[in-house]
Structures are given as C-alpha cells and as structure tokens.
Length: 337
Image 1 (cartoon, helix red, strand yellow):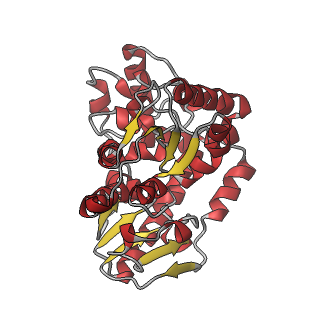
Image 2 (cartoon, one colour):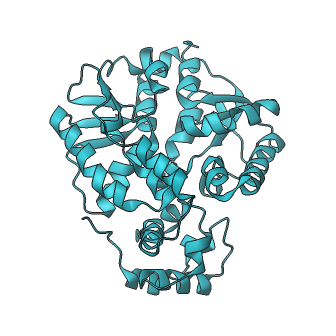
C-alpha cells in the first residue's frame, strides 16, 4: 500500500501555521495551528480531526508542500472518525466501483478525459475541441476516485487509482487533458504525494482552453459581462492552474468582479457540507457566497465543476445571476452559443 510523503519536522518548524490559520472554519492562531498539526502528525488526537469540513483548502495554504489535508484524512481513517453516515459513505464508494463500463472515442496519444461526468459528453463540441476530438475517455474505469477524501477513505483511492492509471497506460496515451480538475489534481498532485507513478502528462483543461482561445483569437468577440467565479474544492489540488481563470476571462472580455470569497478565500458550493455536516452549515456558506456575488455586481456565475453547478445554479439564478460553465462561456465568446 502506498504511503503519504509527510515530514513532521516541516510542521514543527512552520513559521506561520497557514494550513489551519487560514482555514475558514476553524479560526486558529499560529501556535495552536502548529501544535495541532504536530499532534496529528504523531498520530495523536486533535479536535481538528473532528471539526475539519473537508474543503481541501489547507492543501493550498501549506506553501511547504507537506500535505496537511491528506494527513488529516489519513488520521481520520485510522481513528475511524467518520465524516458522513456509513450508509452514505458506502453508497458513494459503490458509485465509483469499476465495473468494466466505459466509453472511448478514437483514442490517440493525446486524449480528453471526461472522468465520470456525463455532462461532458454533450458539452464538448465545436472549434475549441476540434484539434483533439474525437479522442476521449469516459467512465468508471477512468474515474480518479479523489472524491473519497471527503469521506476519510484514502484506502479506496490508493487501491483504485493505480488501477485507473494502468487503464490509461494500456491505451498508450502520452497526454491527457482532464475536464474535471479533481481528476487533474489526482494525477498532478495526489499521486505524487503518495509516490504513485503517472506514465503520462496530465493537462488541466483551463490551460488547454487558454491555448485554444489564443489560437482562435480572431473569432473572439468580447462578452463585456461582469462575472463571479465559483471555485470548487478540488481546485485546491491544482492551485498552479488557477491563474488561467483570470487569463481566460481577460482574453474573452469578461470582467472578474473583485469580491471577498474568491481565489484563496473562496467558499465551496456547499454540496458536500450539506450531505456530511447538515443543512445549516451548507445554507450559511451558500448564502454568504451568493450574497457576495450579488453585492459586487456579478451578472454571471462561472462554474468549473458540473457538481458545483448543479448544486448552486438555481440559487444564483434566483438572484438574477446567470449560471454558466467555463466551457460554455468560452464557446459563447467565439460565437458558438
């Protein structure tokens, strides 16, 4: 079984404790933050193990690359501190069980991965994708399984992810463009954290979209709208790609409103919070987030993750804010929607 690359000395000598100090749910000072992470690193009890809401953000906040969220998840699993009722956890684990059900396009050395998100089967069309389609991969056999860190089930990931990687290897792909950034995070961030070899180059679809829009710049007609960006929890595992949000919006004439809950300070959609920790927490987070969008004059809310969009789109629409996925926004900018 693969083991997490974690060095307790990095936590013991941390000058900031940012992984927990910046947490939007725990509200700790530096000394408490460092002390609690050291406890967790030693396998001792900590209130953090009970109070963490699995927003992933501490993985980004730790600038020393010591994987605090993965560590918290490992220790929760070791101590059987459940984040959700057993029935819900088992249901989710069963959903992602590989069963030989998948769909392949004409796969070549470079391919699009739709993960296990059926929306992409109908969304990926037009000029933006014509240089890679119909080379695509979809289904449980290629599902990254990272969602199980929400449920303190890292063993499921360590068991399945190498099998998923082997399935990619059998296809002979050299580059995989991931349309779900949790999948990108699995291969670019989580796999290396556990010493799991990835035999292909993972590419985030934002990088791909920015390159294609640059190639198609003569087709771009500035949209001239004010938008808020809904950053998903999984984006914390691909923070090196987050700059493409602004890069893309500048390229297509979308003004990204400067609001409180964006970039490092982003709030998640609340979907997992509602399921695991109750309606009250989810509602409070969603209300703060949407009020913030409205207060800063957002005309549209741009989504990265289809799950976030399905969670929030009706709520933002009720406030007069148009919900739209990043792919649709980019297609609109080149006159396809």
